[in-house]
Image (cartoon, rainbow, N blue to C red):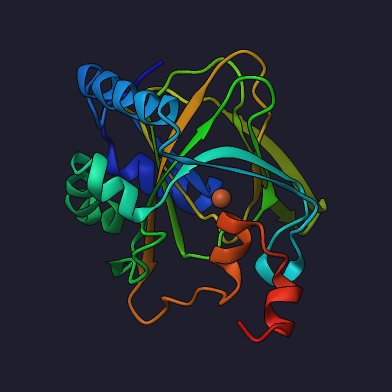
Length: 232
Ligand SMILES: [Fe+2]
């Protein structure tokens, strides 16, 4: 069920549950327009397919799973979907309010705004932590498959430590804000549906760290250790 914007609830959810979802940030008509543009670019082979498995290491906060999705990198988004750059700038104050952080835009043009399109029949993204401080996803599809799966760390003096598993299904136009650096997460493989997530990367002022091998690993499938050895 969709709910209205309630800052107190979003702040509480983000800080205690590591994630919150803001509904209806984008209207259904614009979601549909963007979906159609994205699908036509993929049909024309203008967007790269990321397809690798078992390359991730701890150095890049990755558990070594499978990656299978089309990727629009920052330049692709700016060229073909400039509406999303406006969204990226416009929601920064809201992201600051929800996270209680001094939020800044990403200084990395390749990864500041991406779109991940998971094709039917196994589209997925393996278990990992995000490298950037604040993870924001804008969903352009509504899916009954392929939820974001989170492993939320819990502890209590009387109960010890445990992991709470949570799955969140995409709803077109809704915005998910997550502590991606602190929660191991993945995208369950698709079966028959296509899932489209816009990834909006934000950082905190004074902490714009990003692993130097991260982009070539995620986008190009270059194993992190080899790239470091090659001195790239
Ligand atoms: Fe992630």
